[in-house]
Length: 506
Ligand SMILES: Cc1cc2nc3c(=O)[nH]c(=O)nc-3n(C[C@H](O)[C@H](O)[C@H](O)COP(=O)(O)O)c2cc1C
Ligand code: SF4
Image (tube, rainbow, N blue to C red; front, top):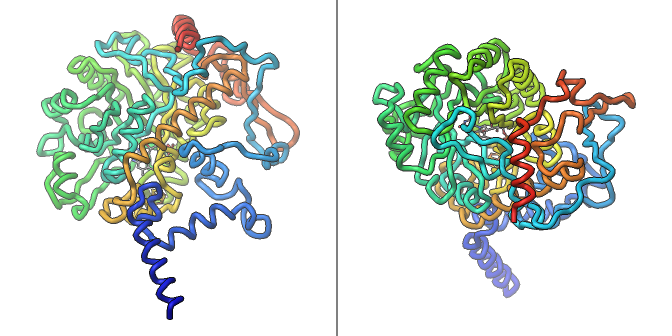
């Protein structure tokens, strides 16, 4: 009997500890049983010696990738011991980063001595088009668009606070700007086909509401969404049951009624009309204006680059999202088969802009599993100026890849509106984790760049990377993607500026 009482008391104490502590969302949401997850995580490597999968299995993100994010976010040891467990020579499309034998000589005052590892963008966003509020983004790593509604308020807030700490930008996603976006982090405001937060009662774009929102929030740039990699060409539906009074107020829609995002914009239907819309928004706000899209047919990109070639109109930035990109919910056929994966998608669009001679005027942003040092570096070698991280940022604030985002029952409180589950996610401690992850990624991008002999990832060329096939052969990125030697870099003036900035960073 005494033993039972002691055991019962212990269980009650553990439950109280679990639901009141703020470090682990899983324990807050699932007292007692949550411990099994941490136990399995701890003894997983030993167990896997005898059963189940390797460190590189599991998708979308392998165990190694997730471990790297969790350890980086917690500022724990993110090294891996004993050497690579990858089969380099037996794996096709294996990325090899070509280091320079001499590397880069250390300079005093270099960014690597600053604990924030600042790596600003090598281009000025909006600079070439002379936008009144052109600026140089302070971080080459930023948070990808994920709407409040798809993510919980607590997750959005954790990311916003984390962005403020790490000095990076948070993209709002097309769900509008919520109170959770107001915790110090600066924003890229996403305008989707629903024009949420900037729409008339009938669902058209409202310039008046748009300007009010820009005025009231720390918006640094506007991104018009054309599509996203996980579900290009598909409109969206937010069921009435999810349209709470808070979501209705933020999006500018009626409470409790289904909200449809059409698959196309009502303000434009051609690249020509889109550029007029872009210039109108830029004129009204002074902000840089960009687009986000996945890549399928080429025609749109060829027309856009041609229309920009006379220098009278243009987008300030282009975000290319790979078909492997994430989503809150999408039909499997769209996620699996519509749109090219990132490297092919980006290489094609960059090539079209470079052939037309307008690539140096655009800030190129990549997304699609790029939130790791090697895949991020590859994106820079292809000509990206910045990378956006979506699911990697979710993992930094606690996501465990349970892949239940579409059900509303996310166990970690990241992708749910359930109050109990959301309560598990403490925005303050998770903000620090998001910031640690972003800073660590910047640090390792910088270390890899320096190993290649350059002081900023934007200065990498397509020749810094080779791709192995599984027959002891390899091709350079330039050969595989048809890049010319001068492609993939910022303009000579931008190069000079970023070299000076990197050398001077205190
Ligand atoms: C839960 C979730 C919600 C998302 N919401 C949006 C959205 O509102 N708008 C959008 O354009 N992309 C959205 N995305 C896509 C991401 O912004 C990003 O483009 C994609 O996940 C690729 O980046 P990643 O591989 O780093 O996650 C969402 C992704 C996830 C996982
Ligand atoms: S449902 Fe799973 S995959 Fe989606 S955010 Fe939550 S923990 Fe992550």
